[in-house]
Length: 85
Image (cartoon, rainbow, N blue to C red; front, side, top):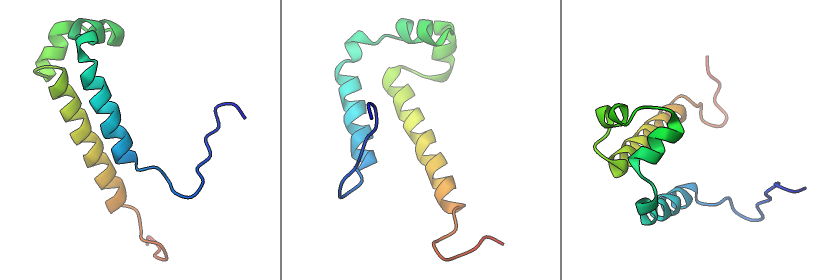
């Protein structure tokens, strides 16, 4: 059972979890550099800067993309009891 997560009464608030993670990440941002990210992602630093101003800008754009994807999924998911025809 190692690695299995069981939730008892309520599901966790994923938005709060994500925000806490981002907050922690930003707190430790002195340890995360564009150079380290680029190296880990196997891209050139210049490629990073073609898309983002800095790491907080990257996180903001990623969060916006996630929200847009979630919204699309929710819009395209039929309500309970409805069938998609």
